[in-house]
Image 1 (cartoon, rainbow, N blue to C red):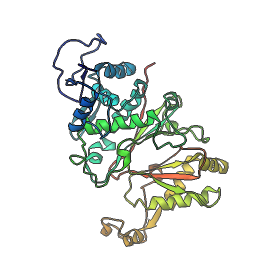
Image 2 (spheres, one colour; image 1 turned 60 degrees about the vertical axis):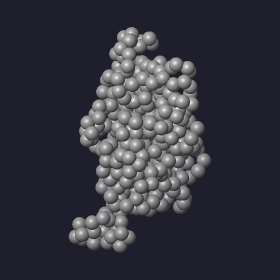
Image 3 (cartoon, helix red, strand yellow; image 1 turned 90 degrees about the vertical axis):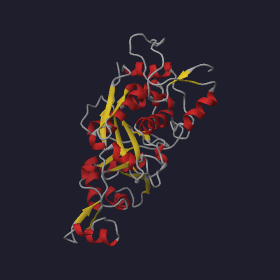
Image 4 (tube, one colour; image 1 turned 60 degrees about the horizontal axis):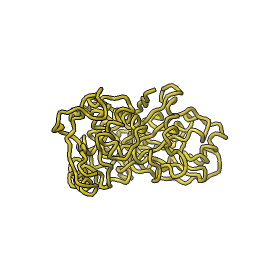
Length: 365
C-alpha cells in the first residue's frame, strides 16, 4: 500500500492527469492523500472525523471508479440536492463513502437511490440530521434486487453479519456525516442517538406471505426494486399474545404504538414470518392491518394530556376528541421480515417532521 493515493471527501485533485483506470469519464475531483500504510490511513480518517468510529476501507481511485462504472454514473452527476444547505451530492462523493463503508459495486445502485430519496424535501434531511431527537436513516429494500445482491431479509434481519445490509446502511450514514456535515457533537445534536446510526438497513421478506411487495404497494411495477428511507427511531419489539386472530394479537402492537405518542409522523410495523402466517390464514390484507392499528392506537385527547404526551394541550378544545398516534392509516407501513421462528412484531417510529420516501433502484442492464 506504500505510496497509494486515497480520496477523503472534498477539494480538488492536485494533479490534472487522467485516471489510469478509465479514459472515458471525467477526472475525480476529490482531494488526494498519500499514506505510508494502512494504520496511517485509518488514523487520518478518524482524526479528521471522516468515519463513524469504525475502520474504513481507504477509497482508492480504482475502488471509487469501480462503483461508478457499475452504476454507469459519471463522477460529476448530481444524485440529489439538499434544499436547506443547498448541498449538491455528486456520484463521486457517494461512491467515496460507499467504498469507505466496504460496499461491493453491486450494492452501489441501492446507495445511490437511497441518497437521492434522502434529498427529497419531504424527507427533511437537514432537520433530522441536526435535531436532538436522535433518529437515523433506515433503509428498507423491497424487490428482487435485494435477493440478487445477497441482502438479509430473514433471521437476524436487523442485526450484524450480512455485508450488504451492514455496508449499504453505513454508506448512507457516512454520506450524511462526511459530506452533508452531520457530525456527532457538532451538527448532529442527538441527545441519545441509537446503534442504527451506524447502519439500519434490511430487506423485505418476500417469501413470508401472500401480500404484494412493498414496491407494488408504493405504486411501482412488480418487476422493479425499491428502497424506502425512513427517519427512524430505534425499534420496539413486541411479543405476540392472544392466539392467531389478528383482531386479538394486533391490539398489543397498537398499544406499543401509543407509546410513541400522538405526534408521530409515520410508523413502520415489521411482522415476523410466523406472525405473517397468522395474518395470511385469517385473510387479512395489508390495508386491514393498517386500519386496525390506526383505529386501536387512538386515545381521547384528555388521556394524552393526562399522561403529559402533548406539547400544547391548549390546542385540544374537545377533551373527548380521539387523537391517533399517526394522522391516518396510510402513515402505517406494514412489511414482513425476520426469521421463521418467533412470534414478534417490531414497531419503528419516524420523527414528526419527516416523511418516508421510496425510490426505484436503477440498475444498469
